Image (tube, rainbow, N blue to C red; front, side, top):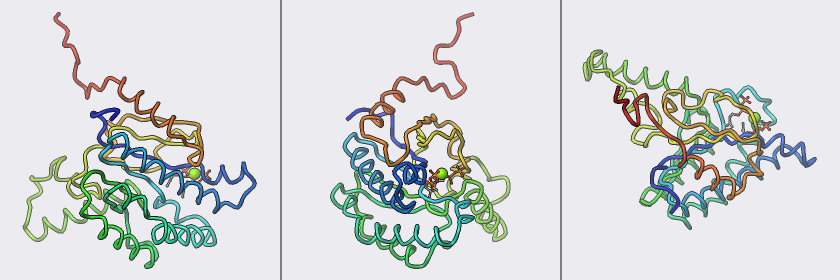
Length: 240
Ligand code: IPE
Ligand code: IPE
Ligand code: MG
């Protein structure tokens, strides 16, 4: 086990398209390569004792992409969910999907539910896949939910707290994300988990997602363990 302080790692899996371009292969094959990388990262996280790993696979903004790409992408997603899910069983990993899931194709929704159901008894580690996920959308859905509860008299406006908001987000019950890794060089969040990332350590690498190696992740985890997390406080309060 490498670290106990790192409970939750998240990945913005970017660069599949650039990988395909670089290797002169169809775009969708870049995503297939990316899915393989995801599987090896799940294995690695389990091996090094990380309890939660969240992988962002599709954003609310990705719906803007051409229909032909969307069709291919979800066909591939269905294939992996139906036929390539052994990584969860072999490693006894609980699977959870987060995001605005009702926007997904019905076939994908069914496969996600099935995998959640079949892995729900595993206790060692949880993998969250964010699909049709956007941070602003997550917050908006949470606000709707809270608003409904206020309307029904279940809670009062005064009872809204940081914790109550967190309990209505897709990530309710999960530990805070300790480190977020974004591959492929862009240094932005692209609307990922805006509320949840308040004190997350950020790590940006030039490596394209399909090229991400176990060695690099181990290096990132080591880098994380060297970081000083102060949360606004002093580590050593000044004496004068
Ligand atoms: C990331 O790959 C995965 C998504 C579905 C968004 P991209 O398709 O964004 O890859 P690049 O950024 O074009 O290389
Ligand atoms: C972010 O990547 C979304 C995922 C990796 C799922 P994008 O490729 O969609 O982000 P932008 O367009 O570069 O901001
Ligand atoms: Mg991209």
